[in-house]
Length: 485
Image (tube, rainbow, N blue to C red; front, top):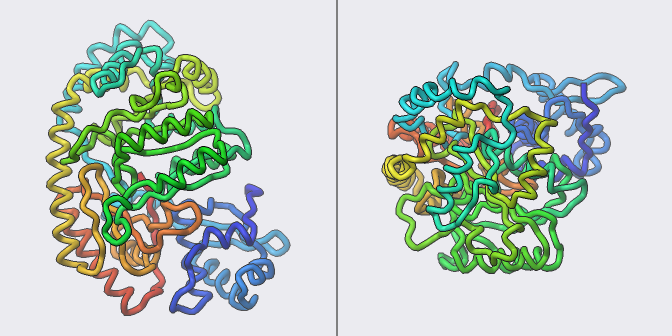
């Protein structure tokens, strides 16, 4: 058992807007369970003592005791006299494999594999023998793939040398590696809110203290200028807080699908250079345009060449080709690439050669791959928007021009309860607070449009049933598990 202890103050922050129409002990129990299932409270974490939590939340100790008892009865808590109460996940193995029990998984905003992937794998296997005389431990990437990734950046308007590329085990691996190398315990880090939760987890694990800037999908008073990044706050954080690192997703931001205009990229890049902030630019969604108008060059192309070392780009084929191909990359100056390679062996011994050969071949076919993905996403987006408009006229569904998700405003702070109710009906959707830093976004839910029409129809029908149950019984006792991608 670990010694990870959650203080009453930290739990209060994670709970967010948990109070509602149900009995306090039921609402509290449901929220703690959701936090555990979402991974925001790790398994084996010791919860605060009942007395401490009752004081912090302004509740009677009897209420806290009842909430903990309900969690124990449901298998989510194990209490040992004199040691405290520890979080558990009952039946986690069975629930974590939704395909085994027919659960529809809408927590993953991914597409099925590109149809040409199998043929690319066959051709790559034929090339493998020429590598079999080496050790097979590759920390930086085979030369052919590094050159292919560099050529792809050049085609997008950002001249790049192979020496500026490091191949990783996907984008998440790249972000975690950068966090370990660039962030020290207690360092200030600029981050968006909402944000991609696994990136936040990696930065938090490295010891980051977050300074957050909001990203809006629906604007204020339908003013288009109010969509996207709160630039005033963003620039203020860079100029006054001097964060060591900033993590941004400027193209089809996950989860809002917003894109940062070129002029804004230039201003942000300049401010980051002035504050000596290294920007980690997550480009995993960058080429998933559907009908985005205008020119959106890679973020690093918007920076002054003299400040280029301050911008680090992360990409992968997980969203464009298939999530099962665990290949990503970092684009950075050679000095940083060398540091990343040196730090890598502490956690892994390199990237598989065969998968690198597959991706090398696929990158040559990027235009045709993106064209087919564009049509799939267009059909999915248009169908989801129609179904949601017909089924939930009170929900605010933003029209997006790329990416693979819609950040839907429910109009009521019921996102966590909706996620719980949907799970009991066979649908996994991540609650809005999963994308926040402090329990916010209870009015939002992220819905992907990358699934088939049939699966989308099933999901919307399930949401309709779950939403109706909430309006009748807002705090029904249900279960939920989702791993966000």
